[in-house]
Length: 172
Image (cartoon, rainbow, N blue to C red):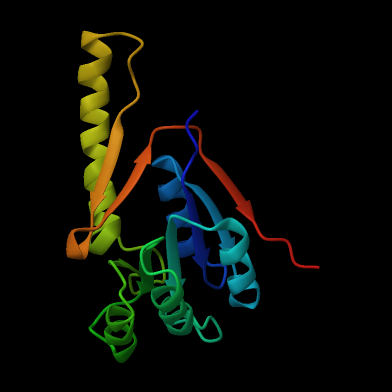
């Protein structure tokens, strides 16, 4: 039985986070959006395959979370950072914490589809659609296609086409 991969995004809720969640959902990831207040608890509870931390939003503690993941779970999870880019001190610290890649924001605060891991996911999405059309045309009923997103340091993010799910942490 196939178990869907889990992704956790820790950031303040914003249009970019919802765009990123939707993009990952389209690639078969079950995503959970949460803020830094429940970050460590959510990581322990969900044990994600992909962990994305906002390294620029005030109060998100993204660098600390990435450093913690690198120290205590270095091989169990692929890590990525959400940022504006520009080789900032926060980006350099994220690289030192072993981050595998970056999801960039544009000047308006939305997800930038022209750079980083977002661009790679978009490129893979086009390849999946092309493969889907070829597979569907040659063998009807055989539609499941594998997605592999190459990141820095020869790491990969693997997911498979399956129904998308999205949930937000509820705070009481």
